[in-house]
Length: 423
Ligand SMILES: Nc1ncnc2c1ncn2[C@@H]1O[C@H](COP(=O)(O)OP(=O)(O)O)[C@@H](O)[C@H]1O
Ligand SMILES: [Mg+2]
Image (cartoon, rainbow, N blue to C red; front, side, top):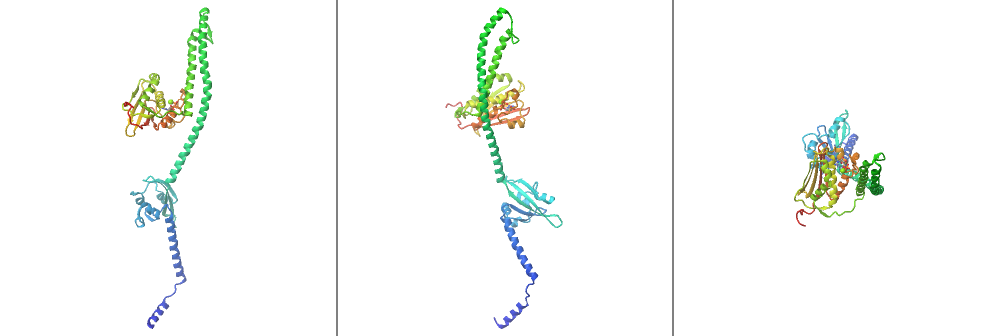
């Protein structure tokens, strides 16, 4: 550098004034602001929840990375766009939008939303109030809480199942105790009734002779000719009552300790229906003139236990009979095969009194009955439900008060061999 140039440079640097203190402070403050802003942005970008800043028109002014990732767009494509277009691709505001609520109320608002992909979102809106007290912008924070909600639901379900299982176990223990207590005295009632019957038969001969010799007489205020028919009726009553108790106790025992039975028989459900019908024939004739059975011809065999399935069909037909109000209302039993789902279907449709939703909810609960005044035990459907579950099938009900009930049993077919084919 020559002497001339050196001189020029010296003059130039001497002419630039050093920044004043205020200028230095301003520059420092600007730098600090920039650093803070960068840190703040980095912090918001690190948060996995979607965060956006919105104005009153629902236009996005700023968004964090999680939001950009969710809508699969760059920051340029997001800023200045309507949030409902970006998030939901709809032309107007979403229903119950917490941001809109927050603009109106000036307070924090929240909403739980189910989006079109079935995700559960927790949306929170935080208003930014300006100096005049008006809401200038709103920050919306959205968190996907699907997994948490599902876990909560699942744990509630497991808990209620555990409570139910526990209740069932204690109920089972209670029931088998009660069954034992009832069975013992009941067997001596039956035994004593049989002995008394034999005594009565012998006494009848002597009393008959006495009546012949001495004329009419009374026992317990009842004349002898009447006693001749009444006493056997009373004996039958004792016997029948005791047999009913025995059957009920058997049901209770069955419920408390389901016995291990062969579940591997080849069962033709048409036979199950026909056997159940013949067992109930007397009662059917007493209750209705309209009992129809329609069995499908090509019925595949299923694996299971025929006797248990008969117990189910008998229970269901009995319920149907008990629901009828007169002999003109009827029952239709049908069987069919659903080739698509590979299930055999038994349907029992009645024109009876039907059920309300409240009753329907409880019918497979053990001991639930609306017929306690008429000897209902509330065990029929509970036992039936267990048996159908053992067969991997389903038991469903459709009913309307005053319009009758349809009970549908579906049982899976493992082997498509037909009943009329030889094994
Ligand atoms: N076909 C039906 N029509 C109307 N109500 C029914 C029918 N089947 C079942 N129910 C209702 O379900 C309850 C439970 O039935 P179930 O378990 O067989 O016990 P139970 O017959 O001893 O009452 C019945 O008391 C009745 O209220
Ligand atoms: Mg019943």
